Image (cartoon, rainbow, N blue to C red; front, side, top):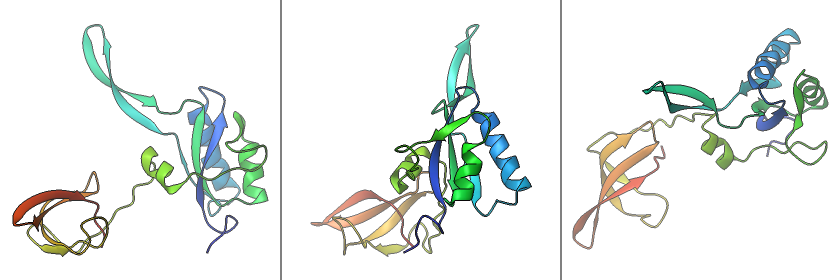
Length: 171
């Protein structure tokens, strides 16, 4: 198993409020200039589009999901830790004192900062074997595929009835 010193993980970095974009830009520039793009791979400021009503008109505006935080995908070494900590506007990593804790895969998925694209070898109308969960071993027919939400709707025959179920695709 790869350890923290060789594999890139996502970390939350605390910044001064309002400095998120500046810290992200400075981190990317510093990684380029110091040739550390292999250690500091991606920098994101999680945002979402929300409707805002101004002067009686509704328009979509971009809002930071976590003001005061930047999410960084990096290989944690003494050099990369020091480089991130010394960016102007950065106050430190999220985690106990000097030990940054990487985000879990669930946290990364919920933040939507990393899009894992699953390529599947089936299409609508194909028969598929369900390989995990309570319906493991059942065979169903693919009715609908929602790539955006990473969902597949499959119709399974249970007890003589056709039952639609939503599943996560696995190649």
